[in-house]
Length: 405
Ligand code: NAP
Ligand code: MG
Image (cartoon, rainbow, N blue to C red):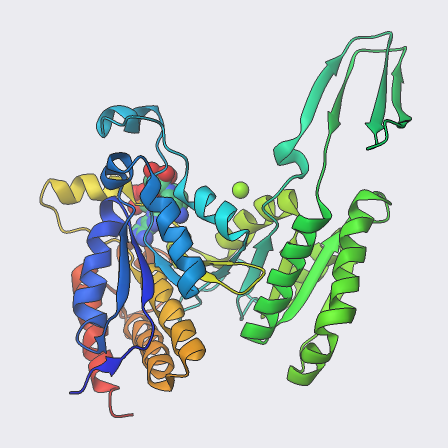
């Protein structure tokens, strides 16, 4: 068989623990037999990050800016225990945080739906993609405890030294608390463009919601920036592909989301996104089936699985056990990245391959062959729990038989 040629390399970011093991299996079993794979390889495994003083993470993000598409394996974010385990020079920052800061992107998380696994909300027959604004608000706040008898004010000094002051609260009757939040127009604009681009890309409606009736300046600013950018830059393109941008109050959005069938993108402010993405992920059944893509406002893409390095399985693997770790979200990270590469390079064979790869995965699961986490929640009668490698080999058989379709 002739292998599919690639024009531009993918940025490949390798990672840690069980997902690093799975990474190699996926390449060997499902990718290398079909594609003349061109990647620019960056080893984001903790050992090499430590060796390079974490420069490799920055370089991988710069490469993503250059080539436009990356695929990333899950990586360890060091904590005190990891400092010892890996004899680290420093407690290096989260690679995802570093990459996101360099690309200035928004993370879109979407579940993979399969036969036999019904979401807790059974009417959600299509995926709900959550886009979380990853800057500011309560995550970069200033807080104070206030003693009774104090007066709290908000004070701003402009560039000419003029001061503007507003009373927050006069704590004459009780002790209390205050908090100062901020966001930047520039960051909100980037968030909005990432969302509009991703909606166009995936041909899905975009919903956005805040509490602008209560927060008449802060949340209202988000609403206005989205509306303004939509009108000026995206309205015509949305109409051309038949999708819609829809703004509503956050309370109304929550009610509509529950009643919906899915199939749209829900853009959320930072805190709403933090909370709602966990709710949505749980409702769809399994963290192991959640994909994640970082999209920058200027259209650079980094694909990954939403889960971590599955440490507990890795320790069992090190003892020689065959684990039944679910590789599906990591496979979809590869298919997502290869499809995007194919679109950007006008190599339709690559896009077709990505479609077949995803189809083969879904076919394998609906044939009853799956990893333990899915078997535990699947309603299929003929289900059979297999280890990761067997699952990938079974997927490979189905992928092979689709070659001449
Ligand atoms: P995790 O790796 O997501 O795993 C938590 C638990 O969820 C696992 O023990 C497993 O449950 C289940 N699980 C997750 N993915 C699975 C899969 N593919 N197949 C089957 N089961 C799966 O989270 P963690 O244990 O909290 O974190 C481990 C490391 O990952 C940490 O060092 C953290 O920093 C890192 N992390 C990285 C990323 C990223 O790179 N994007 C994201 C999150 C965490 P059972 O053990 O019950 O089977
Ligand atoms: Mg959360």
